[in-house]
Amino acid sequence: MAGSFFELNDGDIDKLVTSIQNYSGNAEQAIGNYLENELPGIAKPSIQNLIPVSDRNKKHAKNSAPFTEDMEGNLSIYIHTKKPYHYLYFPDEGEGTSKGQEPHYFMEEGMERKYDEIVNGLLDSLLNK
Image (cartoon, rainbow, N blue to C red; front, side, top):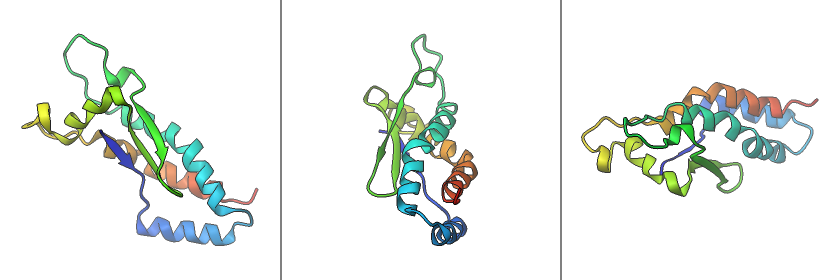
C-alpha cells in the first residue's frame, strides 16, 4: 500500500508550540480538526496529480479517487491508497513490476509540495478569532 505521513520540521514545530501556548481554546482539538477535515482536501489532490499514467487503455488511478485517510493516533494522519489502488506502491517505490525503473515518490512529493500551505493552515487554526 502506498502512503504518506505529514511531518513537521523543527523550525515549524517551534512556531506551532508558540501558537499553542498563545491559544485560548483547546489547541489539541483545533489541530485535530484541521488534520481530519482540511489536510486531506489539500494533500490528496496534490499527490493524485503526480501519479504516473501508463499507456494501457484502462481506467487510471490519476483520474479516480484512489486515496483515503486515517487518523493514526492523536494528532497524526495517514493518507494512503484504497484497496483497489494498492498497486500504486510499485511505481511510487520502484518495486515489483516497476523494478529497475526510477521510483516516482509521488506520495511524498505531493505532500511536500503542499507543506507550507498545510503548516500555515495549522497555524491559522490556532489563531484566536
